[in-house]
Amino acid sequence: MPKPRRDVVAIVRWMLLLACWPLWLTVAYANPFYAPPPPQDDAPVFSGDAELGFTHLSGNTNSQTLIGKTLLTWLTGKFTYSLRGEVRTVSKDNETSAEQYLVSGRERYELDGPHYLFGFARWEKDRFAGYDQQLSAIGGYGRQILENDTHTLSLEAGPGYRHDRLREYDDERLMVTYTALDYRWGFSDYADIQQEMSIEYTNQNTTSRSLTALTARLNARLSLRLSHEIKHNSQPPDDTSERTDSTTSASLLYRW
Image 1 (tube, rainbow, N blue to C red):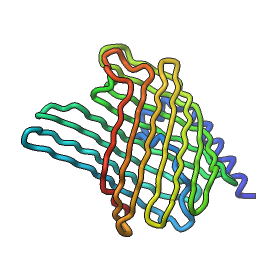
Image 2 (cartoon, rainbow, N blue to C red; image 1 turned 90 degrees about the horizontal axis):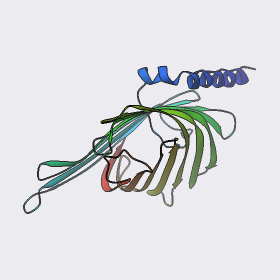
Image 3 (cartoon, helix red, strand yellow; image 1 turned 120 degrees about the vertical axis):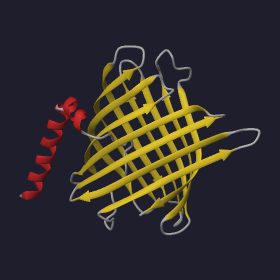
Image 4 (cartoon, rainbow, N blue to C red; image 1 turned 60 degrees about the horizontal axis):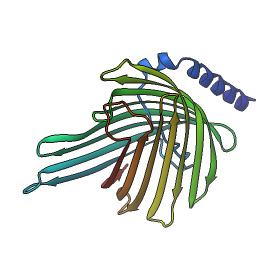
């Protein structure tokens, strides 16, 4: 029975992965924190998208905002691999007021039925959040609750590890309890609404993230996206003035 043996091998693989997270952090790139839906049956082996939003004001107010995101996905049998990168910068009168970077990588393995295993690593840097940088590695179990032409809903949870590098204090190494969901509603052939949420709990703080996006397709490859993102840290470092960051943006999305 080759099929069960492959599932057993995958489960053993993830058990070894969870046991070796500190080593994995030194060699892996980072990865998305949301629970993505499974690939469609006719999905290409390799695909990607790039999102870009930019505003520039000059005159009485001189400011510029840049939001850039990219996501690459490739399929190998029951495995789905993805690599994501994000950058956000805001400046006013030649002074930077926001600067954020994120790189992440993810692996998903489909089990029989609506079940899957996942693992990801993530590196992020936020100049004004009190952290020099954060490294996270998380793995666990997910379940596909809904999957049809109109609605998809994925839920996942698992343990993890996070290394916080602080600017003025000692580094922190924290165990993480993680849960996330991804819901998508395709209410027409040309538009959909997406809601992504995740919570990462540690004994120091709880980090919650939310992304709400409306995407309208202009043609086969180009779309317009309106999105609102929220990131909340229940107990940020002392030199941080705000616990919640939010971003509302309009951008163009190109898929290939």
